Length: 74
Image 1 (tube, rainbow, N blue to C red):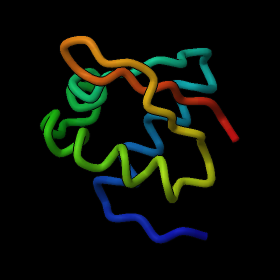
Image 2 (cartoon, rainbow, N blue to C red):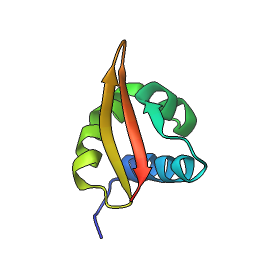
Image 3 (cartoon, rainbow, N blue to C red):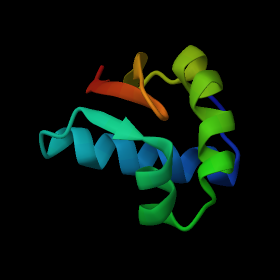
Image 4 (cartoon, rainbow, N blue to C red):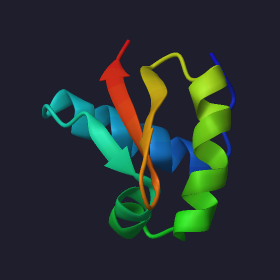
C-alpha cells in the first residue's frame, strides 16, 4: 500500500467517494473547498497522486482557466 501524507489521504478519499457517486471531472479549487485545503495545496499534489495512487486513476484532462482532472475508480 502506498504511503500518503494527511493532505494526500484527504484528497484521495474525497476523489474515491465522489467517483463512486458518479462524478468524474474535478478542479483543484472545488476539491480544496470540499476538504478544507487551499487550491494550491491540492493542485501541487494531484500530479504526484496521478503517478502513485492505486485506488483511483487520475488523468490530466483539460486546461482552460484551471486544469480539469478526470478521476475514475481503479
